[in-house]
Image 1 (cartoon, rainbow, N blue to C red):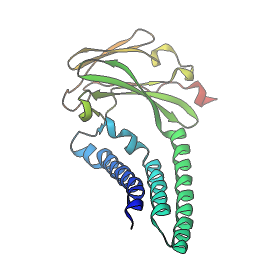
Image 2 (image 1 turned 135 degrees about the vertical axis):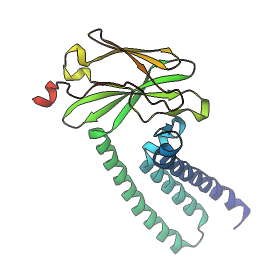
Image 3 (image 1 turned 90 degrees about the vertical axis):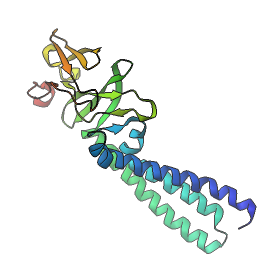
Image 4 (image 1 turned 90 degrees about the horizontal axis):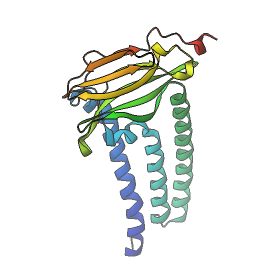
Length: 220
């Protein structure tokens, strides 16, 4: 291949390889490494690749298609590869849409930091429950730069305010009050001091205001 064609081909190939490697690493981190090494957690900077692997696959296919369009010189081979790539892209895009719809019904979204210290952060997620009101789930993250990871254990759970439930079931505030303690406050003023293991981020006495919470939305 002439030198002028090598560089344009190398760029999408390098990007595709990098994205694929990060996607595999992200999935492995959540499934294998997450369970064995960081105690059912997942590294924060790999969350994008572990939570949306189907979009990583779609981007990889786009980049490989671009590389083929630039690098393949024979016309009929280029046309054949383009047709196959287009079909693969359509299938991948359909998969992305299916996963997005499933997440909208039962997945978690909207990671928001609600409290932090020098070493840890408490993050809130909205967890969809299909025809029922969302739950608000809270997990700890370590603050270790590129090695930061998020616990797989829920430190607290409250029903969403959109449910219309009474204040005792709703989240008000949280703060890290010590090296191994998070203070959680409900809207009715109830307070819990939740202890956790600083090494594993596993809570000792988690707060569960989801189980048994009345859900006017789900009962309609």
